[in-house]
Length: 283
Image 1 (cartoon, rainbow, N blue to C red):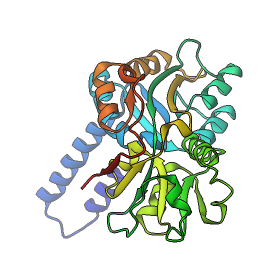
Image 2: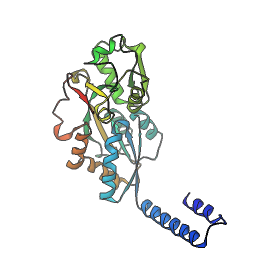
Image 3: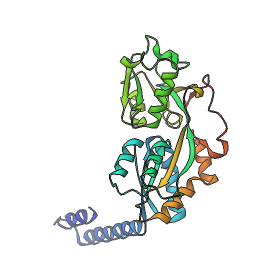
Image 4: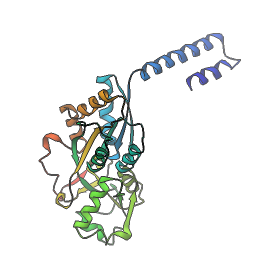
């Protein structure tokens, strides 16, 4: 694209000679910079949507410290696991939940010894700042004032599985079926609420704390904590660098970042999520 842009600029007959030379110099510098940036190893990471905001901060730190570039794709954990099973060229899998990683490990698709739980996440009910709703817990989702509720698809997204588990435990899953809207990912479930397509969304705290609006914790005893799990894919040709990325996530610096983004870091794994009465707002 840079070469085409420079070439088109050269075709402008009205351009003065010095301007053409300047354009060529700029193009050459940009191409050189681009080539330097793409030199060396480049990791491909498939990461759960719940990690979007945290990884936006963590990945650049790793790149600066390691001189290894990282290309991240964010989506549903279950769909990524299926793609990896089908041979997708992935170096590192950062999942929401351990089950899909363990499934891949059972098929010898995970590098032995590379699987680690690197933090834990919990659920909240999120509404927009201008919402007339003042929810105090899952039970309020059954009221007439709440018309539609978004959750991530429980078959593909571990936070969706946790949401279903909590609603089943609260005897609300069947009762709320007419209101439920399933998102492909937790990010999409949140977006449904952000745009007003639904009244509320049950999503990870790690997304809610960055989304604005208001949120209330889901009672932690109603579901199993979501263990964010990372592993190196056995087919990776960059296993040394991939293992370095895994170890980086376990470092105190990154654990502090994860805490700031709403996750429970490893050093506080025994601490329960905030009680159901805890209400948050990013305003």
